[in-house]
Image (tube, rainbow, N blue to C red):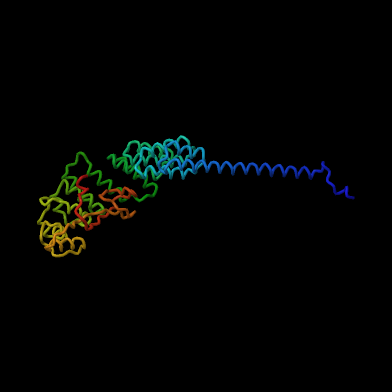
Length: 349
């Protein structure tokens, strides 16, 4: 009976067990090799990062990391972006161009093209940037990033008709373009090569009521090219929106008759030291300076200005119509602050 429970070597059960055993061994060996290769790759990857300071990797190293070590695409882009943060635009461009030769997926290619176009834009190569974003739109006409970038580029290049076409495309994508259209209208007027300064001035004043954010742009134009019309219409402006422009005006460029009719103007120029009319001001900074001007104690305090984006809350030392951080239009507000006298950066531009 003992013989009945002994497996014969030809028993089918032995074959099944053997097959499962071989599968297990093969799986174990394959798994072990994959673990070994992964650890080896990670070790080599760490050695590579040790050889180079992060952000100073050469262009070929990024390709090596992506194609050899299978480093995730997002990680490669993050590493390459360190060039942009350091202002090394040409290196970033080289990395993006090299990666485009290896990346096959359409979505990743589109992302790379967006980054490449942005790098060209930041490096001042607007024509190349324009070509890249136009190329993106050939494959994806609904790419909002490309459309917004082209809007900025066309404005920089004074191609206002094409900028208007971009706004039409954004309208079809349900984007709110109202402020951009008004701003484009103002830019078109200011840069019209045929229209006289007088006609431009009148046209700009007519658009003043469309958006209070236009005050600064229009006031700056009038102060430069039509001071008489500016002072004639000073009551239409909230002067605190461009107090820095008034602060840096030369004495002879100021209409003192208009100043004497407006309290805030008296406060500004009393604090500046041009006149001695105001005893105090509702504005804190102006009030301090007026008090110091009226005292016998000499002071080195002066009024300085910073510009804060209402959208991203970033500070900027000079006014720009478009925030360089978040690229929102007409989003800067001027904030006066007390400090030592500094060079007027705006007057140098």
